[in-house]
Amino acid sequence: MSDFASYPSLKGRSVFISGGGSGIGAELVTQFCAQGARVAFIDVAEEASQALVETIGRAGHPAPVFINCDVTDIDALRAAIVQAEAAHGGIDVLVNNAANDQRHKLAELTPDDWTRITDVNVRHQLFAIQAVSEGMRRRRHGSIINFSSVTWLKGTPGLPVYVASKAAVVGLTRAMARELGPDGIRVNVILPGWIMTERQVRLWLTPEGEARLMQNQCIPEKLYPPDVARMALFLAADDSRLITGQSLVVDGGAT
Image (cartoon, rainbow, N blue to C red; front, side, top):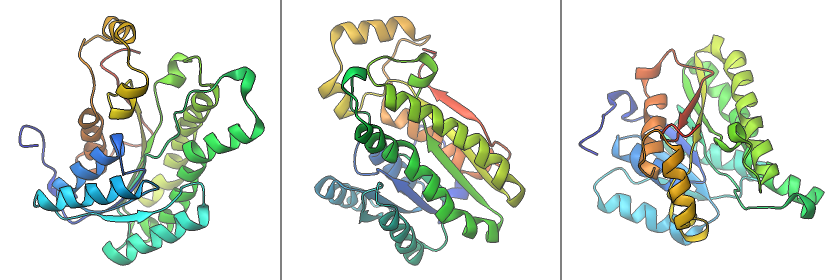
C-alpha cells in the first residue's frame, strides 16, 4: 500500500460495497479500510466475509462491518444500507461490485436464467443507487462507482446474458450521472479486463488463455484485484471531483 497513493479525503468516509467477501470485492474492502474509510459490505459468503473482517482488523485498520445479504433481495439490500448508515452515517461512497459471471450457453438459456443473472449484475445496482441517492442529495456530495466489464466491448462469446447486463450498467451509469450531477453526486463505471482472482484462476485460466491474453494486452502483465481497487479509490476520492459519467477500463490495453 505504501508504494501507491493515499487519499486524505477518504479518511472517515462512509463506504458501502456489494459483493465484498471475495475476489475484487474483498480487495475493495481491504483498500478502502487501509485508507481509513468506514466500510460496510454485503455478501452471501458468511465464512469468507467474517475471515476478511478479522484479517483487516489484525492489520490495524478500521474493521469493516459485514452484513449477510443477497443482492437479489431488494428489501434486504435496502435494509443493509440502512444498517450501514446507522453504523457509519450517511453513505458517501457506493461501490456496486457484486456480479454473477457464471458461463452460460445460448441454446440452454431460460427466462429464469436471464432474471437470475441480471438481478445480480444490474438490477441491484439501480436500487442501491436509489437507496443512497436521497441522502447524498441532501449532503450535495457523493461518489457512486458501478462495475461493468470489457466483455461487452469485445462481445465475448459464451456468456450472452452477462455481456448484455454489463452493457446495461454503462447505460445506467450515464443516465445516473446526468440525473444526479446537479446535486453534486458523481457516477462512474469501471470496466475490468481479465482479473486474476482466485475464482478466475481456479475455473478458467489455462496456459492457452493466458498466452492469448498476454498477446492481446499492450502491457503483457496479468492484472490482479489491487489494480482495479486502486482505480475505485481514485474515483471515490475528492481528487476526481469533476470526473463523472465516465467508463474507466482497467485491462492492460487489451481493448
